[in-house]
Image (cartoon, rainbow over all chains, first blue to last red; front, side):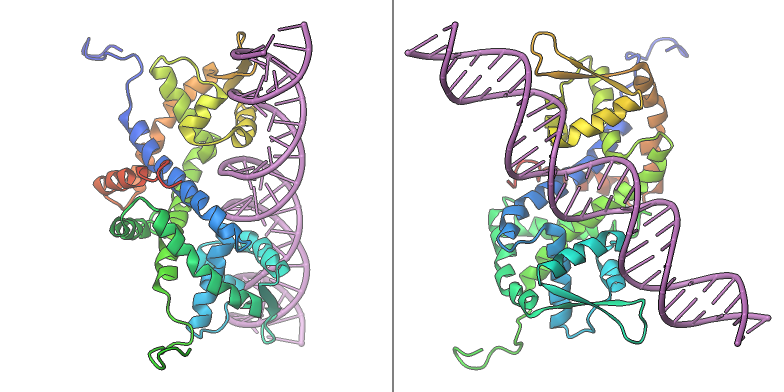
Length: 159
Length: 159
DNA sequence: CGACACTAGATTGTGCACAATCGAAATGTC
DNA sequence: GACATTTCGATTGTGCACAATCTAGTGTCG
């Protein structure tokens, strides 16, 4: 309050940046959780959480493309997650009989992740998941796609 | 593999929906974490995590607008969080001396959250946070705004 | 008044995200 | 061949998100 006497109407200026900024990171935060919440009941029928579902998607795609079965590191690169997150998650998937975890023979540091028969079979039931979610979505598919493409720019770019 | 004999080229059809779907929820997931990661070092100077920063933003805005100080329920509605998340988070903010938590006299079920002097003062330092982040962002501000507006549509709509 | 439903917040338990650290295995260098 | 460095995954500890449950305070209606 002072300098040039008089234009400052508010003792604590509005600070639009703190607002705008709030709303981008916050919108991202909320939207992500709302989408996960929409997935939850559908994925519950498969006995999967959303992060587990993402891991399974990678494994199913990998298997379909006949790629070498992935190591934990390769999964981590694809999903942008580290071993501190993946290790317990993969152990739970193993506990449910959906994957196996076996050390590489030539390099014992590496751990290969492979679908079991049950894990591969689960893909058929997962086929319904995106269909159900798109049906529930009040947002046109075209917008979802454009949104996805905009979001992709955040991967690795920002930091 | 059968009926109508012959068009199926792939024993496991590509299932573009499982891919597309993957990429929207996944892009949301990754983008959110990357943004939080970009905030982390900046917020660390204030001793705040990103969710704590969001709570403080609401409290600062509330104070500036001279609104009644919020209850836990009001904070939860604004941030789309429940007491299971907010209670421990608010206790940590209280432990750091940034807020106080006091029961309403007329209805002892309600808990008012109020900024301490230190909590209010922190706002000055937080002023730099969005500036720093926007400077780091390789994405034009206009795109950030349009992205924010698209993301807003997910709030409450989907489920 | 007393039985009832309702509300706000706290608690408990599970799971994810991530920084920091560790140990073992592999690789590189002299 | 001995030793430093790097790599991979596991472990530990903190914090967030959320479902389910609990407790206490409030309101209502007979």
